[in-house]
Amino acid sequence: MGTWIVLITMVTPKAEISKEIADAAKMCFQCGTCTAGCPSGRRTSYRTRKIIRMAQLGLKEEILSSDELWECSTCYTCVERCPREVPIVDIIIDLRNMAVAEGHIREQHKGTASNLMKYGHTVKVLDLITELRENLGLDPTPPTVLANEKAKADLDKILIATGFDKIVGE
Amino acid sequence: MAKYAFFLGCIAPLRYPGIEKSTREVCAALGIELVDLQDASCCPAPGVIRAFNKKTWLAAAARNLALAEQQGLPIVTICNGCYGSLFDAAHELEADPELLAEVNKILAEIGMQYKGTTKVHHFAEVLYNEVGVEKIKNTITKPLDYQVAAFYGCHFLKPSEIKNLDDPENPHILDDLIEATGAKSMPRKQKMLCCGAGGGLKAAFGDVAKKFTETNLENMKESGAQFIIDVCPFCHLQFDGIQKDTEYNIPVLHLSQLLGLALGMDEKQLAFSTHVTPVKL
Image 1 (cartoon, chains in turn orange, red):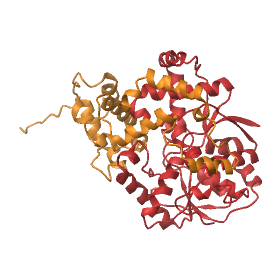
Image 2 (cartoon, rainbow over the protein chains, first blue to last red; image 1 turned 180 degrees about the vertical axis):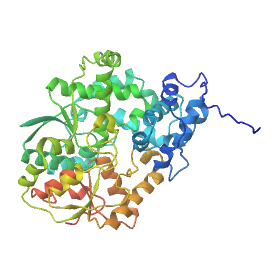
Image 3 (cartoon, each protein chain N blue to C red; image 1 turned 120 degrees about the horizontal axis):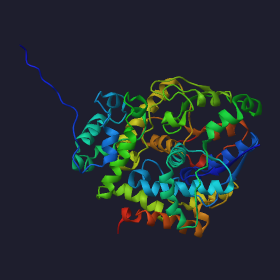
C-alpha cells in the first residue's frame, strides 16, 4: 500500500484580514498564471500568486509591511488571464489601503498625496508651463480647481471628510 | 455634433500642454465639441490615490462625475489613468446603490449630489467609435509617412470585462487610428507590456519602472519605429523622461499630437519644447 498525502488547500483566514479580501481571494487555486504573465514579477521579487496565497492565509503583517505590495504596476495582465476571475488588482488596492491605514507609506507617495492636498492635482504647478500655456492660447491656469478657490475648498472638504489629510501627516 | 465635457487631468495641462492644445484643435477639425469640465480636480489617480484611500478616491471621482452630470454631458479624457479612475468609479457607483448613497453623504457636505448617470469615454475611443477612421482619413490635410510604435498602455482597454473596447491582448483600435494619418504602425514584440509608471511604481521604485520602459524601448527600436504614439500623458511622461539617461532616442507623441501634425499644426503649436526627448520631424 502506498502512502497517500493529502494537501488541504481550503483554509480559514485569520480574523484580522478583512472579509472582503478573504472572499475575493478564496477562488484562487494557485495555478500561477498571474505570476507567469506579470511584468513586475519578471523584474523584481514580487510574486502575485504568493501575495494572494498570503491573503488567503491571513498573513496580514507580512503582506502589509512588504515592499512587494508596492511593486505591482496595476497593469491588469493577471486579471485578464486569471482562469478563476480573481479580482487581483482590487485585492492589491485593498491591501495597500490597509497598509497605508497602518502607517506603511513611502515618502515619495506622501509627496504625491501632498500635491493633491495642495493643488488638487498630483503634480506641481510650474511657472514655465503657465507661460507656455499662455503662448499656446490656452488659459494660463487650467480651468480646473486651480482656477476656482471655491472648487478647491470643496475638494479639500472631501479629502478631509474621508481622512486623506491624515495620510500626509505632519 | 457630438459634445463632451473635456476632463483635463494633471499631466497633460501641467506638463505637456501641447497634448491639450492638439486635442482641442483635432476635436474642432473632426466635429467634436469640447466643453471644459470646469472646477474638476485630479481624477484622482487610480494607482496612487486609490491605493492610499479608496473612500477619498471614490468621493473625489464622484465629485468630478457630478460636475459633468450637472452639465448633462458625457466625459472625454485624454489619459488612461483618468479614464481608468473615472470609468471605474462610475461603474462602481452605477452597480451599487448603497455605495452611491454613502458617497452622496460626503458630497452633501459641499452641496452636491451624484445621480449616477455620467458616461466616461477615452479620446481614442471617441475617435474610433464616434468619428470613425474613414472620416479621419478624409479630414487630414498633411498625410504622414512615418513608421511608429503604437503604445496602448494598460487602463485604456483593461479591465476588458467592463471596458469592452477591443481585444486586450491583441488590439487594433490605436493602430487603425494611427494608420488613418498615413503613418505605419510597426509590429513588435510584447506590444502590450506596461510602461512601468503605473500603480505608484514610478514614484516608489523608479528603477523597476525604468526596466519596464527599457524593454519597451528596445522592442520599439528593433521594430524600426521613428516615434512612440501613446494615448496617455503618464505613459508619455515615462517614455519621454526616461530616455535622457539611456541609449534610446525615440521621440514621444500623444495620439492627439500625431493627428495635429496630420492636420498641419506646427511644432510650436504642439509644444514640442516641453518634450525631454527631442522631437525632430
